[in-house]
Length: 269
Image (cartoon, rainbow, N blue to C red; front, side, top):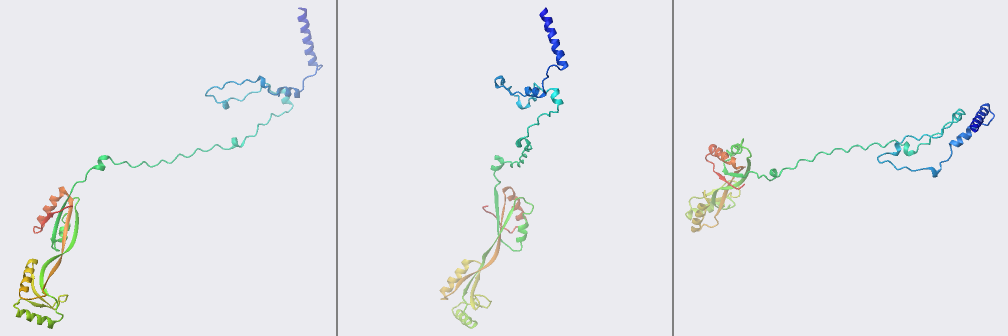
């Protein structure tokens, strides 16, 4: 009990001495040095990282030994923050623009559409057309679906003539004509029209080649030599109609109703 009372008296005496300034007080520099003691590696402990937790988002660590009020009163400024690195000072990279949306590819044709057969075509042909009715025959299919008209011009023999070639002059032609009369050939005359047969002698005009060849044989029996057959041609038109098979019947009826004298024949498309 006495020892406890003695200790209390000693503590009170020390407090009184410090209050009166009899004992030295620690300087602010000594307090700052104590706060800035270097870290001791033997006292550090590495904690296991918590899964899913970002260590960069931890709140800043507070100093366990903040400077005393007396140090702040002496005008010591807090240490300046470290300068930012160029990487941290650079602005955040802008997000790349979204790629332009490409146009959707065209739809592929279905197998049924690609393999569906076309309707068969029919072919009708009209030959030896009189030039007077040719325009009307070309306009006749108007209104019928899918009709194609093809025109072809050609030369066709219309008659055959048995002649003697040109004699070169009117006098020579007359002398040869007189010789023919003496041989019993009466139906002959001199050709006076301009052309390659001028001053030739006509020995007959026939509608068929067989008749012309028969006349030529008769002249040879009468010792008339040098005669020949020359075909006379005229320009004729031919129309071919290509159309769907279900339209061919209507087209044929139209042609025969309008031009009954025309012969309509089938052909290969």
